[in-house]
Image: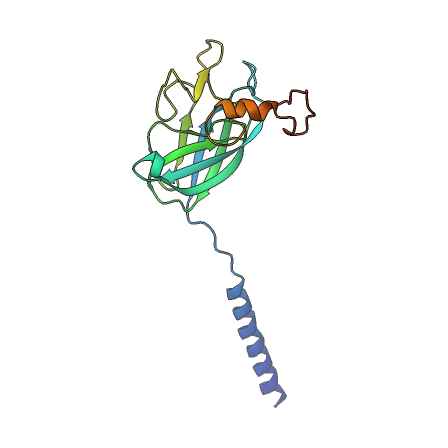
Length: 191
């Protein structure tokens, strides 16, 4: 009798253990897709080193960037070499717009969609040409500007009000007496 009761208790405990384990099983990513992005932020690079900065790296789907939909976004740290490496879990293969965002800098998208293969490593360099950002080179309102004729192109700063354009409103915001931690008459450090 005791033996049968003990077997019943052990059997019940195993059933409970299996049920508990099934409820708390962690699901791991099947594929990890890596992006290595080079982006120099205006005001963060002195011609030799880049000041580390947190950035968001976003992948958007859709035929046209202006109507695209965010599919995945993650954050990473631009290092002193102006490079950030980020990963996306279980990202389907396809064509994506690569967008990089940082605080007071213009959000910048790659000129064209990038064909992504799930589980692979992909690279993009915003710093090596003036036409690497959407919509390409624009001499009137560039989102990427060259650093002192060095051939290194930087993401433009100045979007202080967060409306994704550099305009007179940013100038007003910059000199507002309540901007950041500054007092009236002081010019805040915006980089």
